[in-house]
Amino acid sequence: MALLSLKVNSTWRALRSAEGAPALDVIREELGLTSTKEGCREGDCGACAVLVGEHVGDMVRYGAVPSCLLPLGTLRGKHLLTLEGLVEGTEDGLTPVMRAFLAENASQCGFCTPGFIIALTSWLAEPRVPDLAGALQAIDGNLCRCTGYGAIRRAAARLVERFKYLPLEPMARLRALVEVQVLPPSVLEFAAESTREGSSVPRQNSETTSLPRGEVAPHAVVGGGTDYYVRNPEPEKGFSPLLTQILPEFGQIRYVSDRGERWLEIGAAVTVRDFFASPVVRGEVPGIERFETMFASTLIRNLATVGGNVVNASPVADITSMLLALGAQLVIVPETGTEDNTAALRLCPLEQFFLGYKTLDLSAGEVLKAIRIPVLDEPSSRRFSFEKVSKRKNLDIAAVNTAISFRFEGGRWKDVRVSLGGVASVPMLSTEAMDVLEGASCDVLDGKSLAGLARKAAQAAASSISPIGDVRGSAEYRRRMVYQLILAHFVRLFEASGIAEELFP
Ligand SMILES: Cc1cc2nc3c(=O)[nH]c(=O)nc-3n(C[C@H](O)[C@H](O)[C@H](O)COP(=O)(O)OP(=O)(O)OC[C@H]3O[C@@H](n4cnc5c(N)ncnc54)[C@H](O)[C@@H]3O)c2cc1C
Ligand code: FES
Ligand code: FES
Image (cartoon, rainbow, N blue to C red; front, side):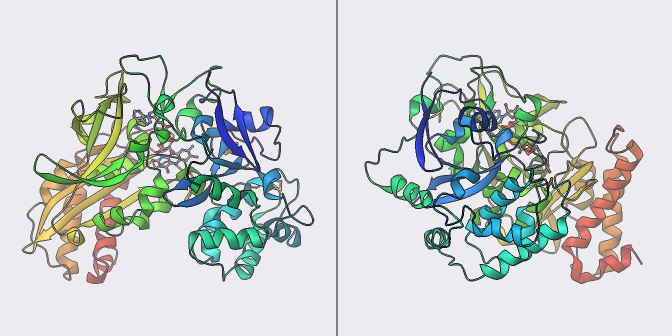
């Protein structure tokens, strides 16, 4: 078995464990770093959070992820920081984040505390102006059963007050955080090692990033692992998946031209965080960033991939619902020889990919390489909205979701696509709602006529589905939710027209 090199706190280590082992087990059992706790093992509690540093372009960046769902192999060549590593070099064994917790009595039994410290440290490392909303968002994937969140909130507020003037330039930010001992010196060592020419830092190489040509070993394809490891919490010993996150060409967002059309191509291994943060995605789909926090938690978004969301084929997958409305096509390639596969690739419209419940137009030996969104001549003309109902605001799978994308041409609706999730065995388009809207004339300031059109489209969508009932909602509840969510799209998109008062007087 090939050795797997990564920097663990301040030391480079070569591990023998299988690439498919959940990192949490290796961290606690092989590395003996027991500050990282095992709670739910399902990505729900954040007790197992660790900081992962990686080289991105000329920079190094850090993000917190749940190690219970993290395939060890994705840490190859990266920097793994646990609490034991964070306190290295501190005067009293405490970082300022820990001191804020102490000052506010924000820890009782302490089981959740390492996860909160890691998540807040990760938030401080992001090159943004710290504010309380951002701090609370950073810990939306962390649960505490005994302290109560008031004290944790006060600790976060202390950090906002103390660190509001951190530099915004990424490397200057990391240096400043090392200076004040929020981060350890090993962060700057890692940055230097990663960028040094001819560095001894182990790099990803083709031997470890794709299977040998013509040979398909029994294994699974794993992106972030946030679905895979929930289903397989203890994979077989020696399990070695094909990790899409370490295939460099699977991680890009770029423009491509193919068969006379221009596309924005999003690599299957692009994380949900990077998808929403991407300036090009934001440019092509104006306003899409508003919907980021409707997906899981910060910890999960840092790990989950866009491709995993599609291939997991949940009928209520949120990114899939958005991509359906955006007219996405999938780029599918043979998994052998994934690096030179232009000739072998095939395209599949996303709506044709789902053949039945968790049954896909994807053969054994094929992988999803990327997702393409058609590029508009005037991207700013695209209107887009996403809605979802779930029991909890964070960390909850939708009962029903929907997205809509269209543009106006000569005062009429054009290229309308409406997706629905949670109303059938597969994510789907509502062709009935699309037919109502396509070509309809529209005055964006006429709330009354917009309300009439919204009701017609909502009725068409709700009456054309035959949902089943389950623990998340009865069939009738889902039908009503579809009706309401289509109205909600209109309220969001035409706020200035006074449509809300028309629909809900
Ligand atoms: C706590 C929690 C909250 C969640 N909340 C949400 C939510 O709000 N909304 C939502 O939509 N989802 C949610 N999810 C589900 C999950 O995070 C998403 O579906 C995520 O996008 C999956 O991506 P991944 O990379 O982690 O998938 P993985 O677990 O790596 O893979 C999922 C499946 O796809 C296959 N696969 C992955 N990549 C490829 C590829 N490139 N080619 C072929 N096969 C591939 C894998 O074999 C696996 O069967 C949540 C999960 C958890 C644990
Ligand atoms: S153990 Fe709960 S998120 Fe990992
Ligand atoms: S301090 Fe006990 S669970 Fe949070």
